[in-house]
Image (cartoon, rainbow, N blue to C red; front, side, top):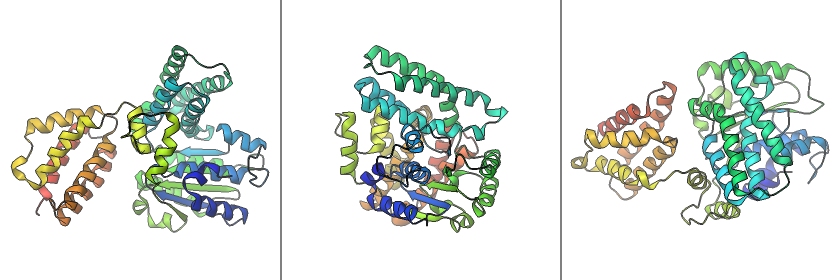
Length: 396
């Protein structure tokens, strides 16, 4: 068990594995760490180990482990908060280029993690169209997985185009929400948890981005975490555990996932045959394959940071608006803001911005980047307002 996790986070893999073997694994856990630190991989492999009929033997072929290998298990629900569009585009692009068993399996696994967010226990009349799209996409994946003949490039393009069209409602929904966790979803999870166990298997609920949900959702979830029920496990994933309610933190066992070394990330990217040497992290891999070009924003971001320490370089309204239009078009607004934070930190290291100003700038960016989504503010208006606000804190 934990073969994938052992390749990236061996210490955590051993710790979790030992706690499961000794029956001391907590009913409520928090896997925290930076993005792309294998938290989701760990959560799925944890669920697999908890569900195994053969006590977690290596290369187990019990019915439960077979289902987990194909990500077709029914005893796991994922309520997620991640950029599926970028990940799926990257998987599609690599499959079209390589058309290998490796790239095919990677595409299947990437899509199925999204589809696990559409477990039958979360179905309501309101989301019927989304569940229909999820079921149709799953049917396509089943047929795709059984297809043994190598795909020609035109066949690969036709299939992936059809798959993306089928999944469009799901990917559009993914763009809109901070998290799919709602009060209704928590109630449905509570009902599911209260049902009898599924063929003596554990029930595992993986929730990503709990810190981005509202107070009502968190309070509803807290009630289930207090008494999860026999054979039920909650695994929370977070990149910002400091924003999680203390009452929730007090009920979970934490596992910290350190960043994966860049050399290891490069090694894991190598099978995808990426020739660009600048693609040296998982994040850059997904963005590059998805068509994102960081260079389009580089000059603008440099000018923005320069205006923080040289007020004579303050951007005009026309210059701001040009960037806002570019910012509005991209699906990678969070990544762009992350680059902006990195450039501010670099300016501090180079003694161009004081520690006080740097802290104030980064704090505003981090806080406001969540707020504009909550209140559904357009990205253009958000960034114009953000830039003015950032200028206002310099030297205060």
